Length: 444
Picture 1 (cartoon, rainbow, N blue to C red):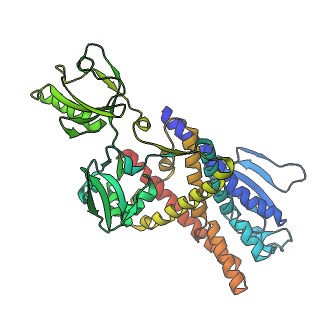
Picture 2 (cartoon, rainbow, N blue to C red):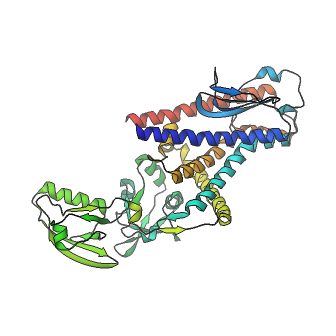
Picture 3 (cartoon, one colour):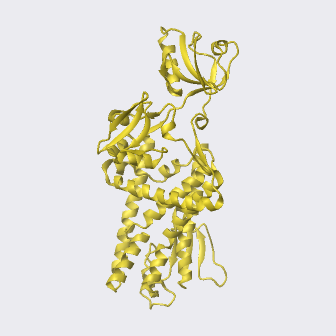
């Protein structure tokens, strides 16, 4: 329950900020062009509003709705989700949206998307300025990667070190690396000290989506944190900080070591003598010891993975963080757009998620670094999704405005009303499908 509440609070805080900034973009451009905004509401408020106030001498009422699915600004003289058709039948007023030139209306409509994208760039910049950039270089992962079953069926093996895709070297394990692998013909890995090739099938992404399990994760060593006195490890001379890399001559990672010792415990017939290769202060050595009757050595291992792998860290000054954050934002947008094509596949549609999926991307414990990173990512998504040319979204209004500028005539109000209704129907259906997928994942 505590984990659920922490993630729910992060989700609500993040979405509230993004909605305020998005609708604030529409609001500021509308006020810039002297267009009346009748209402600015965080969350939706069908039937009633939790809180509302209207400043003296202001045309705008500010409020908080009870349905946390977004928010809106109601702009005078505009056909939007409020479907206020009665207003459109009245004589046009100079402060109304419909009375403004097409280029001004276009800027009002793209204001939300622009503000969301700029917010993402700013957050990324401040993340780099505050925490820097930290990652594990995949080519230097000492024990390689742990792959899921789909990747193994394609040809990857646990312990492979990822080198390059079609000759382009890998740097870090992120969304771009996975995209590079999926789009490649051949991936080069380091296996047993020698380079090997893995040939990538055209349907690899569909297979990975069907698998629904992370493509790969770092294998990290079994590092001793503490040792019990007078137990086999202490008597053999092992010390805290020793990193075990081999068991009986075979390379082994943390979970493999745990599983193997548990297997021997259940088997009961395996010999108690084991040979360990370990690294201490950069020096490799080998010892042989006899485990106790439960095949235990009397050690406690470290479980903080980021202390067990080589990490590259880069610090940024305030000025240097701005272009670096902008580059990171553009890179994130390109990666997200590139993966959108898989949404239209059978397996991609199954992966579509609603609020449960969005909430699950936040950490189970409060972490400001991850909170802001996820908020920036969601801001990129919100900007891109809203600019899609779908009626009822900002992109739908932009599409009709571009048509008006090119054709030099407006679509009729009746057409705009029907387009708005169709768009809202499509979006509502998409929302139901996404959250239905969440329910299925929760139940099964």
